[in-house]
Length: 260
Length: 314
Image: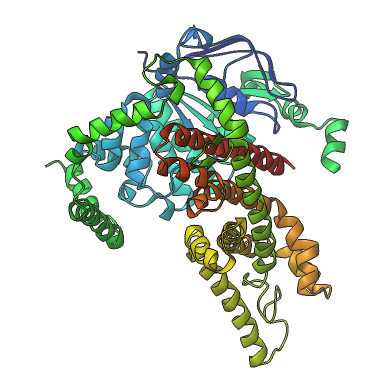
């Protein structure tokens, strides 16, 4: 198993009920790379991340993790792929009335049998508790190990979600708008934390993010999506404001729809 | 011990704990152990030789009479079932009602009962809802009301809730048992019994639905000078209607089942036919009525599921 994941999309299309969510997207992400996904709401950023997490099947084309198209995987193999990809959800998706340690231990469910996971949830072993503590310390909330998750602040809960992804021992981390609901100082902190840990561990990192300044500060490469298509794929340094404005500008139709 | 192990150990020792959860877990374990021990449920009892013989005889008896001692034949069995469905058993010594008649009466009883229960529950829901049955409904602190007025509203609330609690705390079977003494043996005791118990249940569920309605629309109408009755008609019932109907159909399902059971008291529903067949030792007829009952519940569940899905979408 490689230490960090490579993603290759070739002509990938995804359809939901009302038209294409992604249209003939081709994209290569090398192991250990850090990429920011930007673009207006509804452009397909979340769809793209779900595709990389192997939780979505493309309608056409090949979405490959480590060189193998997802369509060729059995469901057991898909589980194995997902188990090695950490996903930080926008809404955190933690179980509020469990202790922090239990939420973090859940990160490894994809590689545990039913009984092993029930045991780990009810009675985490010393070794597990210490591993979780080490990760929590890394994200800055070691002392919260045994607290109930819903007693933590929003920023702290976000760190629990990141710790859960790290406990997966992932080869890549995907983060969907991880900073859209926190204040600017915490947003910067979180992006810094995710990029630093990914760099130190050599993990591939893909993050969808609305805040262009933060993206520019922490990510060398940017992928700009609009209406399910890749409009920008370049080093941040090579892109000027005009191109970003064009990415976000509303068409007349969208203006009318928003105004209605 | 490493430094981390010490830290984790200290954190573990200092973790927040719920004493209540602990005690109740121990309490539940103790109670379960006691119940099994005190009830003397001996598992060996279930499998004694005599029971086995009984079971074998029963399995032989549930075959249709035309098939006694012969190999199983679906054609004969279905013919017999069809006769039972259309004309029942017409013997010299006793008669058993046709499956169709028993089915029809059971269904009619359940429908009559749930309609009554639904109407009573709907009317009772408002005086049983805290948001309606107060002196300053929807706009707390908005008017000065006398102590007597406040008490009167509280009395209405408690009275309605108490009445609903009382009628639903007595099971349908017991209600029917008591009512047979008053109304004689007909379908009425069963219908009234079902209606009473379910009115209590529906009244309570509907009242909670009304209490949980978002107060904005109700408050706005109150602010425009509307009375409680007007608010109920124009805002509360329309916004709670789909939920009321969901509960209505859910309770109807239970009514269908209970209408069968109530026949055991001598009221001519499926349960009556079933009980008669058992008393006469006609296990094959009994099995037929049991299957009719299952069919009826299946139909009820299906209709109810379709209606509830349609309501949820509407």
